[in-house]
Image 1 (cartoon, rainbow, N blue to C red):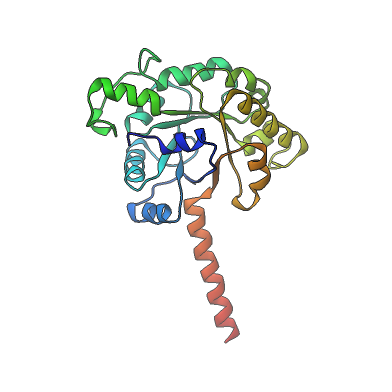
Image 2: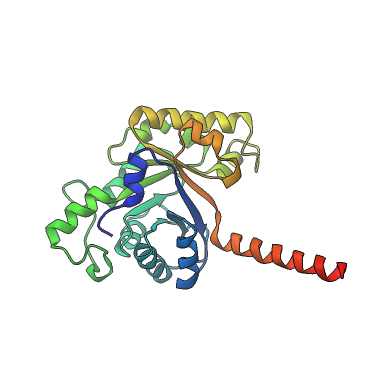
Length: 258
């Protein structure tokens, strides 16, 4: 992928629909996901069971199918940033960002010199490998999306400094961990949680950044009105499970009613 369609959609202010992926998934399933209109895949290396070789398959297949895979790395370490990007991904999500210094590291490691300090390797895995070395650096620096997660009370307190870091593209809210950090686990609609979402959106708007969140698809209108545009709604495997469960339930109702 030479153009990060997710990044450009967010720059245009368009809402984008994504689903989460926490475990291995095959190409036929990815085709179903793409045909359903999914625009990006929240590919979780922090909590999921995916390993780096499986991430490579997802990133390359998603690219071919017109979707953007966004790997969430396990932690803010250079090798995780570099390896995720070397699969060909043009986006990285960094968890638990609580300071401008952490955001600066994320940007530096995502960008080649002179913008950052990323090293270039494994060109056969890079989606822009067919272009020259200088062009690949320019394309990557321009198209790579850097998303930092705001998922703690400390992250919310420091969100203005985080948002001021050049090269940050998305402030991505983690509502579940934020609810725990705020002292009411699981209550993502608590008054202080909603106030935190609004603060993140206000700061992002002032800086020209996008805001993302993990949320239920049927309850996104109020977040869209706040300014959220990058939505991860449920998981691909969860939707499959729900579909099979619904079919099984309908089957049992028919049999028991016969």
